[in-house]
Image (cartoon, rainbow, N blue to C red; front, side, top):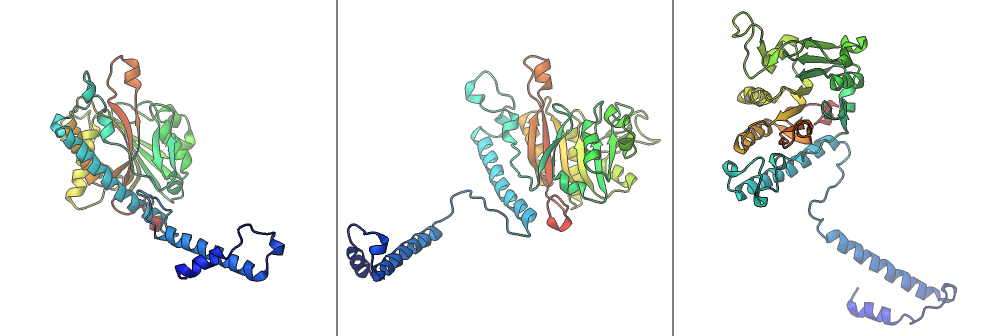
Length: 341
């Protein structure tokens, strides 16, 4: 419609509209036409407007999990770029203090602020196990529980098995394999419940980046196994949930796991990892190298929770313990693909 014709139509309308029943039909039609045209113009303008930055849209039907993983991967690349730029602005990894103190110019962050769990789990997230020290965050427990065979590995048992017991209760077909050289059995949450204990298998082994066990081991009382060796002994090719809580030995163990599979061009053989990180005595550059190795192997953090037990017990103790939960985006499994759901 030309602007001249549009102006004439508008000028032709009465200044004060009479009641609807007194308006002649031709004017009703004209007014309705103008209203429709105005609404149509507004709609076309809004459709042409660019989406707001960082807009999030629901995934297309039938591709929810894959779409969410791809979207999260794209966002996580931005997170890594921001982390690299922040580190560079502080003079590089060798100049960053993990626990700055004394000078407010260097005290606006701690180690954990550089490693935020900003990858989204595409399923429901539950905190499983007792409150406080011992509980872990799990991605897609409802998806895992529907599987015919669920395999769980728990490296580091100590005296609390509330997490493992809760997993067994949530997944009726699950079998859990526990490893800890410092204790002789599961905690009471499993040991005193026959229905759970029959699906729980305990081994007094240590976990490491190299095998050191059997007749030729350096210490017969300290049998060390790698993840690959344990899986072969148990006849497993995939672990649904891997928990690692081995009091600082997680650095060597996980480094060994990642390098073993990466060097062979293989994805890590588990769907997700729950690990308590004990950053005792670690400088920033050393920790960064280790965390980046986990990321390069396909692990993406979706939850973290500081463990402040030692901060509470001992005054002026650094918050060097933190629980992290990772999704493995390598390979194919239920948590990252609808094909396997």
